[in-house]
Image (cartoon, rainbow, N blue to C red; front, side, top):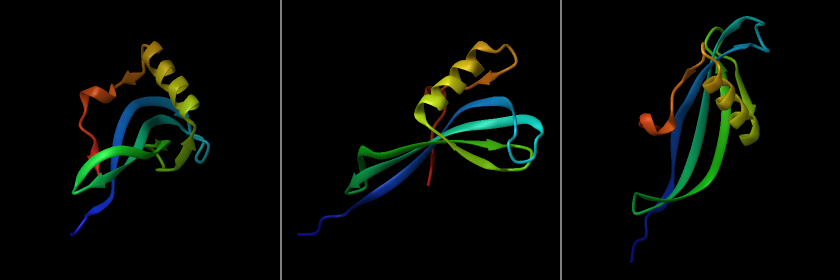
Length: 97
């Protein structure tokens, strides 16, 4: 009997925020992303194994890890800000890696 199992990654873009980059110091757009790794059995994703959040500067490309609480705060900040471009997770298909 052959059992095929593994993991598959999904990348969601949660929001685009204007922040000051810690690397280059420029006030620029940053994408807030959520990476979910799911356990698969016979190529069917069953349950999440890990969830990680990060921001990426669109000016210099620097990435910074953030906690789930920080990601929630940044999302709320982007939704409350009139200049923030909030893009909901349910509106987009995930990038699969």
